[in-house]
Image (cartoon, rainbow, N blue to C red; front, side, top):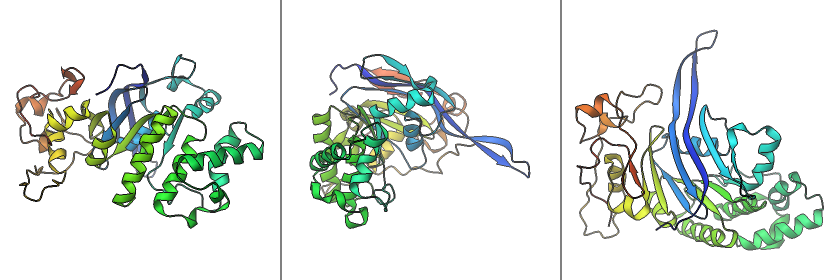
Length: 338
């Protein structure tokens, strides 16, 4: 359960539209609604898991929060180390660069996120150099300490990324993200490209680093088992919108949105004697360039009624800390995962 903390990050009405251009003059004929009115907060020291199918807008949301791509609309508030709250959309380039020290990203693919022509010293030490640490000796000492923290030997700093396995490369990426002592770390599917045994090692490392560095995580993933292990709260996305958000145990034991229940039914049962309760959704994921009227999920929802086809459901709190966007949230009794 989450304890009472102050929010480190608050997102309201976040939207990202990508234009669709056609013809010789490349005129805009429509928009892909990659992120469509997303809102949530992350308390200091907690981990919020952001889950959903591929293409639902998870990574785009994460990149908008970091201003790696510019959001179309919405507000992103972050409480900086001095205690003041800044609206990141209003920051100029120089102000945003200073704020980069407090928010970093761990990328999904450890093979393509590291420059093959740079040694570990250059890869992990580059953020330090960019932010003013000119002394090479100081950078070497700092990189050596970071490598130890992530389970690598300091003498490896003279080597290149090709000399390391996938799990070791992800450790290098984590060390690089921690170089500037950030407060917020966005982890974009950081274990999805790794073997299962290595995934457990990286997740345990993230736990330890969170305690040591007082980190706050936005953990983007599609593997619900991983999300359940590491997250305090879980937000479920579908076609650019968050459809449910609650404490991790609440989401897994008592989902209130049919899409969440369908995702949970796909989690493998460890007991082979347990009969599968898989919910197979009909149809295709809604097109974000032309979403259906009403609830975006209604064409695939086995519980849809007429109001679902005509009116967008309100975002409502049905119990303490449990939010859902569904017309029938109060009357449905959906199966969770024990």
